[in-house]
Amino acid sequence: MKARAVQLAQQVATALAIALGWMALFNFNALIFSPLAHSSQAHWIFLPAALRIIMVLVFRDIGVIGLMFGAFLTLPHPSPSELPHEIILAISSGFAPMIAVYLCRRLFHIAYDLSGLRPLHIIGLSLAGAVMNSLLLNGYLAISGRLNGDVEQILTVFVGDTLGTAIVLLILSTILSFVMPRRKRTRRLGGHR
Image 1 (tube, one colour):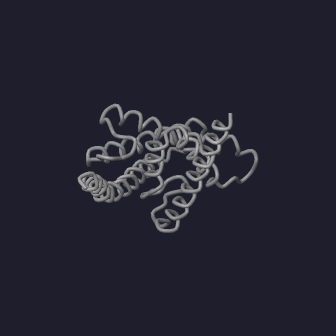
Image 2 (tube, helix red, strand yellow):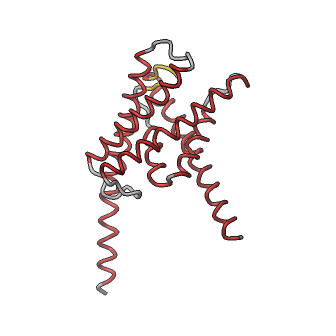
Image 3 (cartoon, rainbow, N blue to C red):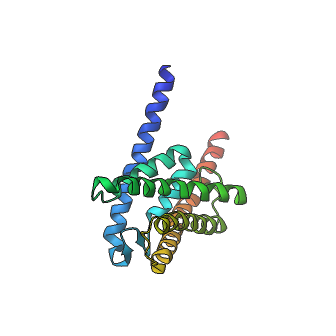
């Protein structure tokens, strides 16, 4: 029973850390790329889109929950009547990367720890994440009558998510390519002593 409570506390802490990470990267992106924003929901470069993919890859369900909570916290909350709308937006922010990661893992056999991430994987994850987020977000906005035929909104979400994910995953995979081989070499050298 105590072990289960500890595990639950760790999961809650992880989800909260992911939510805070989302908020930090969301605000950083707004600060740096505000001239490239089409609207509060569409940026031509959206770095947090990469966080969606990475958190779902590494933390799976807990990543999805953390992303939903973080997305909810970054919404404007203009009035209580907007709560259902904001909850749906937050849910889509977690489900879109979950679907994208599931499809890419089945297609490319991508490891959960991001090891062996290749350019094709980065392109696949970036495009799948952007397509799923653009479909879910703009599909919901269209159904709810909030899209107003804005084709630029749809294009901006797709391009911004693709570029943001590709930029971050490229940087991360480059760093991992230097760190991972060193760790393996260190282990091999340590084993020969």
